[in-house]
Image (cartoon, rainbow, N blue to C red; front, side, top):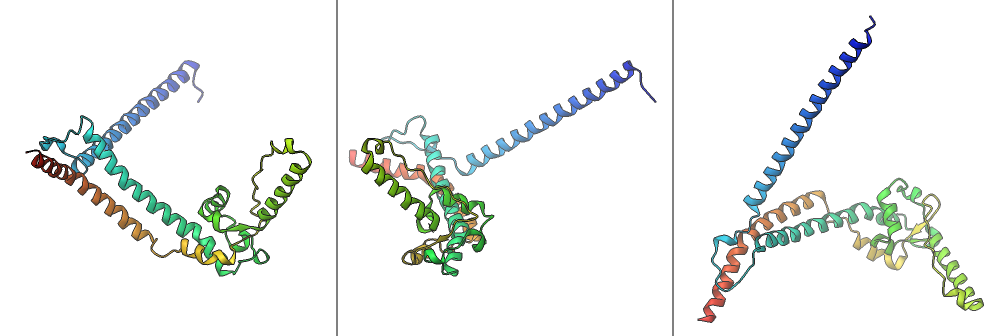
Length: 244
C-alpha cells in the first residue's frame, strides 16, 4: 500500500527521531563507560603508585610543589622504558632473528650463495622488509648482493665526476638503493655469522619471560613509589644529624 506524502514524511521523521534518541543514548553510555574506566585508572594509580610525600615532614630537603607528580612520572616512565626495551628485544630476536637463522641454516654466507626472501620463506614478512629498508641492527649484519653492486657503481660515478667536473661533484648526492624484494639476494658474510646469530639468539626471549618482566616492573614500580618518601626521609634525617 502506497503512503501519501504527508504520511511518508511523518513515518520517516519518526524513524529519524528514534534513531537520534538511540544514538544519543549510545553516546551517553559510551561517555559513562569512559568515565568509569578513567575513574578505575585513577584509583589504580592512587592506590598502588602514589608517592606520599605529604605524610612525611622534611626539614632539610625542599621537594617543591610539583614533586609528587614529577616523582610518579619519573618512576613510571623508567619502568615503562624497561618494558618497551624488553618488547623491542623480543621482537628483534624472535621476529627479525628468524631471517638470520634462516640464512645461517642455508649457509648463505657469500654473494654466490645469497638467496632471495622468497627462497628463504620471508617474502610476505612486512616486518623484516621494513627492517631491511630502515637500516636497523638487522641491516648491519645482512648484506644484499644487488645493493653492494649499486653502491660500487655509484662510488665509481662519483669519482669520475670529481675527476671531470670538480665543481659539479660538490653538488653530488648519493641516492639510496631501493630494494626489490622479489629479485634481491641476501647473505651474511662468514666472518659476521657468529656475531649475528649470537645477537639475534632466540634464547631468553619467550613470551612468558616478557609477561614476567611486565609483572615484575609493575610490582617494583609500586614498591619504589611506596618506599621513596621513606628513603628521602632517611636522607633528610641524615642531613639534619650533621647540622646539629
